[in-house]
Length: 293
Length: 336
Image (cartoon, rainbow over all chains, first blue to last red; front, side, top):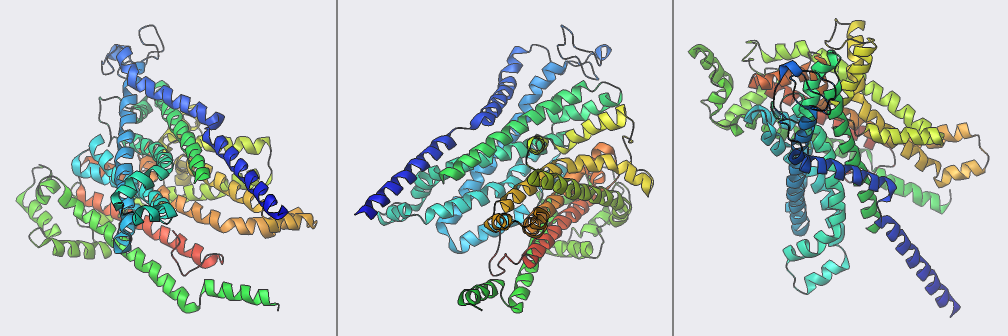
C-alpha cells in the first residue's frame, strides 16, 4: 500500500520536474532573445531600409571617392564615390534573400525526401541514404563554383547548387528523427485505423519534428550566408554593380590597401552580426527541440 | 575471473569482432570510398553535358579558334564517341594524370596543376597545424581550468565561429599587413621560409573558425569526461589530478575530438579556394577561380576532381582510423 503511494508520489515529482524543464526550455534565454532582436533588426534594415534611403546605391561620383561620414553620405562613400549607407542597406537584400532561398529549397526537398524514405523503408530508404551520402561528399562551395562555371557567374547558379549541397544536411537529421517517430505507438495506432501513409507523415510525424527542422534550417541559413557571401567576394556570386555585403568586402579590399577600410569593415560587421545571431538562435532552438523530444 | 568479467569480455569480443570482421569492415569502407569517388567523377564529367548548349560550343565559349584547335579539343574529349565511352576515356586519363590540355594556357592540365599544387598544400597543411595546436590548447585549457577566462574564451569562440574566412582574412590584412606591416599582403613568396612567411596570415585566416570549433568541442569533451563516474571515483580516492587528467580524461576525450578535428581540416580544402583568392597565393584554388572566369573548363574539371577526391579520401581515412583505433566503436554496424 505504502509502496504504491510512494510510487505515485515519485511519479508525480518526475512529471512536475519534466514540466518545469519544458517550461524553462520553452524560452530562448537571454542570449537567444538578444540574438533574435539583432536578427530582426538586420532583416528590418534590409526589408524597409531601401524604402527609406533615397540615395541611389549605384550612383557613381568619382570626385567623391573615399569620403568620411557627412550629412549627404551618413557613412561616407566607397572607391567610386557611391553612398555606403545605401549600398549596405540594398546589399542586405541580396545578402539575405540568397541564403533564405537556399534554406527554403534544401529544407523542403530534404524533408520530403527523408519522410518518403522513412515511410517506404526497405531498398528505397537505402537508396536515398546512399544518394544523401554521395551528395555529402561534395563540398558545397566546390559544387557552387562548378555550377557558376557551367551557367555563368551570378546568384541563380550558386543558389541552385547550394540548395542541392545543403539537402543532405537537413535530410539526414529529418530521417533519423522521423525514423524514431515512425516506431512510436501513435503511428501504429493510426496505421491500424487505415490512415494513409502520406497523411500520417505530413499531418502527424512532420508537426512532431518541426521544431528540429526549424532549428537546423536556421543553422543552415548562417552557413549558406557565409558560402554565398564568399562566392560574391571572389567575384563568382552577385555581379557588379549590384550591392551585396560579400561583394562589398571584396571591393573594399582596394580601400583597405589605400587606408580607407570603412566599406570592407561595415559589410564584414553586418555579415558577422547576422551569422552570429542566427547561430545562437539555431543553437537555442536545437536545445529546445532536444529537451522536448 | 568472476562471471561478470567473462561476460563483459565476451561482449567486447562480440562487439570488436574477429580479425575477419575487421577486414570485412575495412573492405566495406574502401568499397564505399570507391563508390563515392565514382559518383563524384560522374558529376564532374557530366557537368559538361549539364551546361547550356552542346559540349563543343560550351568548351569553346565563342572563342575564335582555328579548326586545328577545335579538332584537338574534339579529339581530347572524343566528342564523336558515345557518352559512356567518352566518360571512360576521360576517367582513364584522369587516373593516369592526363586531364587534357588547358584552353587558356595551351599546356597539359597536369603540368599547370603541378606548378600550383605546392602553394595550396602548404596553405592547407599550415592551417591544419594551427587548427590542431591552437584548437586543442584552447579546449584543454578551458576544459581543465574553469573560470572567468575560460568562459570568456568559449564565448569568444562562439563569436569567432560566425566569422567567414574571407572576413577574417580582411581583418588580418588590415591589422598585421597594412597597419603593423609584419606580413606581406599578397603573393606566395619564394619557396622555403619566405613561402611560410607569406602563407602565415592566409593559414591563420583559414584556420580561425575551425580553431574556435575544435576548441569548443574539446572543451565540452573534457568537461564531460571530468564528470564521468570513474573520474569522480578517482578524484575521491585522492589520486593526483595530473595522473587522472593524463590517464583518464585526455585519453578518453582524445579520439572523438581528434576525429572531428580531422574532418574539420578536410573541410578546409574547399574553404582554401576563397583564401587563396584573397591573398593571391597562386595555388590551385586561385587557378580554379580564374579558370571559371576565363572559361577554361578542362582545368575547372581537373581541380574540382582533385579537391573532391582529396576531401573524400581524407574523410574515409579519418573515419577508418577512428573506428579501428577506438575500442569503444563496434565494427559490425555503420557509424554515421
